[in-house]
Amino acid sequence: MYSTWSLLSVTVSWPRGCESDLPAPRTSTSCSPPSPIPGRLRRIVIGPRGRGLGRRALELVLEHAFGALCAHRVWLDVKVHNERARRAYAAAGFVHEGVLRDALLTDGVFESLAVMSVIEPEWTGRER
Image (cartoon, rainbow, N blue to C red):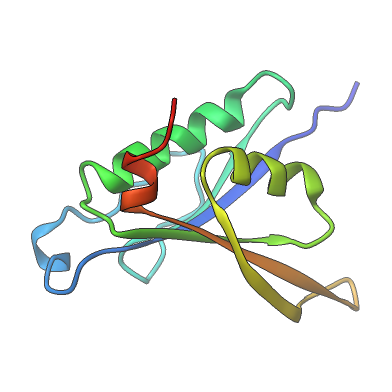
């Protein structure tokens, strides 16, 4: 039997001048190596699908970003054809900003990426 896993990669934006006061991003053994860019969580793999684990993990990432890290904006990109992920991100409060056309080359085929973000006032003002 095969398991399917979800993939999440987000970038956190802090207010100017705040970066030096914040702890360095941390990763666990289930995450990719730390990004050379401060504030960027490169990748988290979560699974199996269908149990709400991805939704909860995304919520925890956003709580940490907007709480402990004082982030103003969190953004991500997702393959345009990945409707399931796009719906999950929208349900978490992410707003579609646009498309990076033919931005990713995978197995010799170019793929477009949708850019989505959520900003702190939207996150704190959301209905739960």
